[in-house]
Image (cartoon, rainbow, N blue to C red; front, side, top):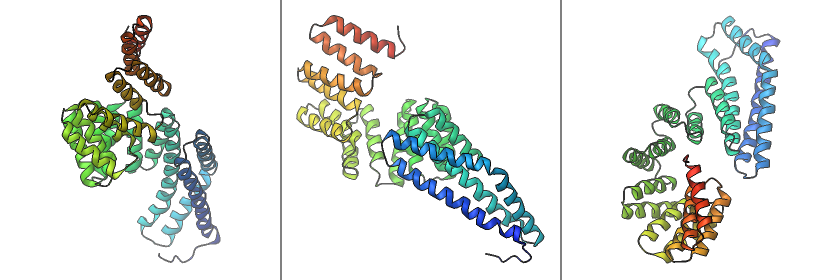
Length: 335
């Protein structure tokens, strides 16, 4: 670090104030990390409140921070130091604030406050447009808000910034999968696997594409790899259960659905799939119980209403069947 001569006391005060600013931010980042690793709504709310306090403090001290940055610039100019040395002080302040917006956005996303999360990620990217991680976060928020075109633009920008970011390829695969571009989605999941072969999420996602392309043997190989890498991967067990159910291995399918539910007790899709298996076994009462559980965890699950309607119809309970069919049609936007 260069030594500057002729620095008066006022200028020297900038350094401890900047350190104090960075210390406050470090404390909040630590709290945010703890918040993201706890599942309770109370902790997420606490994290959001702490981020808001920090951002309010930055707004109150914004003029002071700008004065400090300007003072440093003047000092460097007076001492005939390279102009490039001014950049770290200013960018450090922006980066610190951007990281806090990003952390609060993560807390908002965890609480499913997607519009608020989007606003925070926008604020972070205005300060530091080169944050590939924040672009990914905004991409996933836009996916949740069903803005697939906007999500794709963010994801591709993140890949341009960091072509080795495996999760960004996985995100783009998810978008392309929802857009019905299955071959492109599979290529993205394959690239994510190449970049990070130890993440069980990527083969699990590629397995889903292969099942839709009627490649159950290939899907089974991928899902087995996903479970090997992540033995508590609920979605992978659910996918393997579907493959076994289609192959007529009802015992194996039931075991996999049970494991999926064990690892993710609110997994509505696994309850519905287990219900389909129960119907295949001729046990409509058990199937209805599973559909009820699916709807308890996801009250807007149209497929579960339709499946329960079929189970009621099989039992001769036509009024209940019609009510469920009507609900499924309404949720899908029909009349």
